[in-house]
Length: 385
Image (cartoon, rainbow, N blue to C red):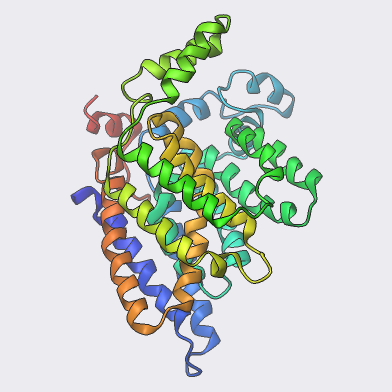
């Protein structure tokens, strides 16, 4: 558990700060809440913005970054871009950072600043009175993964969340435009483009419950049906690089594997029961959160119906897990004191356990610029390679 200690400490510290925001007493000055939010920004900047080389993905991102010469002219932009591995938008972003003289560690810092701005905008939109609780739940549910590992994907996810307002406003061009911008940073956002026509509808409660019960049965009984359908389709289609890649995923013990009845699965089942019970409250009197509610439904049904495909579960639900960050704080505001106390205890226990499971690994050994960090060679050597 030693590797997880710093991450758990930060989670508990942000959780403690959230009580300042939730105090509705008249004696609490507005300045105290401002100071709490500033403390949050500073704390996360110091911890995540000034981190060392953490996780495994930095190996690939840094290798890509190091392909860019330290000194080059603007006329070389296009030529350099063709030597890089990722989407065009991300490549231009990295080239610009390199052009202004940033090393890779500073590049990570810039990434976190951008991420925090995105997250704060999302929090302000949904949780004006519970921003710190929003960040508390964010850290527990994929926050560390988003901030440390999936640097490209996370920005696209935040862009998608911010684009949801245009579905509500029926501005399809603006919504699709933001998705297209995101596509130049991570191609996975293509799955969100047709959602404009799905997310705005309100679905029958009994239909939702029936889908959940069927999906739960498939999940618990570990019924495998997708692999069979996919492999049958591949046999019919002509052989291409895409069909070969999909076939390789299906035969992979890792990417083609499934999850069993884990603590996370039990949490998702419990959360569905809670959210379903308070569906009307979460959606709002004027259906102002119907789009977000449908995002949550996609999240839970992906986890139930696609459980046998790890490659799907590992990536696609990340676009919709934000619904936890906004719905749980909304429920917290409506709880009486005994219920809220019980919810806080659950959050501390589950949050600590979840963070531990996520980062208790030598890859996540924490290092900070202010206290000294390992060189890339030292870091990889510590991984046992």
